[in-house]
Amino acid sequence: MTGETLQEITITECNRGKTNPILTTDYKLLASFYFTLSAAPSEDWIHIFEQVRHDRSRHSSSSALLPARVDAHGIVIKCRPDDLQQCYDGLKADVAAANQQYREALAKHVRDEKLKQTIDHAIDDALAKLKL
Image (cartoon, rainbow, N blue to C red; front, side, top):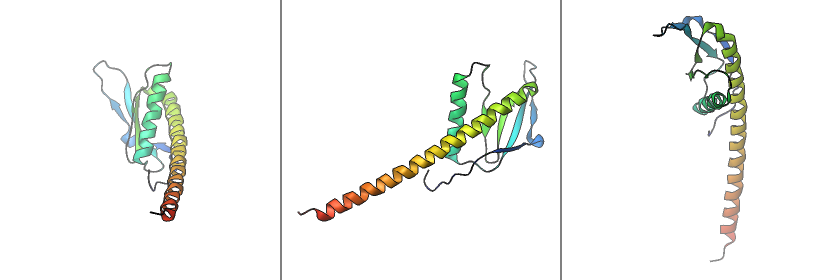
């Protein structure tokens, strides 16, 4: 997380050109919906997003949460076309939660770095005053 800055990730559109039907052996109506993101997410953001989705799937009382795949330009979710709005609303909430947790992780990283610098200075001062 060194050197990363906060760039809020948002869903900007559903890319119809990358949205496709999924053929299943049991003839369920499924599609992979591709949502374009406002910016390319960092690896740390992706990890946090995946954890948010995992946590929500464990605590969800509804049917099993289908996985979402993040790439450099978007997020792909798989769902029934009839369930798209509900899935999108959940995805949008997960993106917002990932942004919040990422913001908190960056702030913690900054605090940790400042504390480390303070301790390093105290060590240097103590060593400079040490009489051997």
